[in-house]
Length: 264
Image (tube, rainbow, N blue to C red):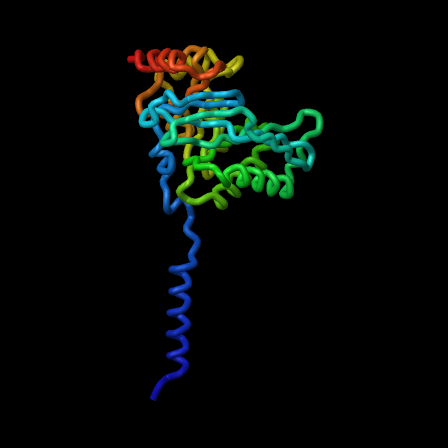
């Protein structure tokens, strides 16, 4: 004689196990280790900001391009989107990263509420929709009062992007040295901006030259340097993001590569 209660319990358990296997949310942390999504990017990335750039001369097996895709200006409860207006040309097979620059209005401060965060998220995802970029990079010099907003936005982005798409951020050097707020962020790399550092420049460069390392592991994978400033002692294994205040050229690229390769 069939025990109907036992049969129902077994069927219920089977359904729950199947649903769990098929519908269980896969967290990015379980699928990917920090930096793994970025591993396919070249060790040298050229930043291309809002100006005409013809980068068809670069070797796409050695160099990638992190190109400014849009600037988001936060005003009150509004997001004003300025997409890239200047042309850029790269080799068809060149790995690219889409950079979104975020800035806060200084006269009408952003409200930093959930509605604004959703609007920023929608704007970024719209800019990513038609791109072939391997990763998204957020450039936002968030003030102390904006960190919670930025933290939540990055989690929103990580949950909305495909798991295979890298998520990176630029970071003030002071964030990497003195703060621990980066540790909770769901990003694959935080790129210390080792140029235009202001009053802390000499101290930070001296510390790095003496062999010091950044406190945050997220800041130890890649560094951002400029062609027109002294270079820190670049440790092996770092991906370099290269910034030029002038349009890129063969000569400009050769000059900065010679400087980086001449280091001991």
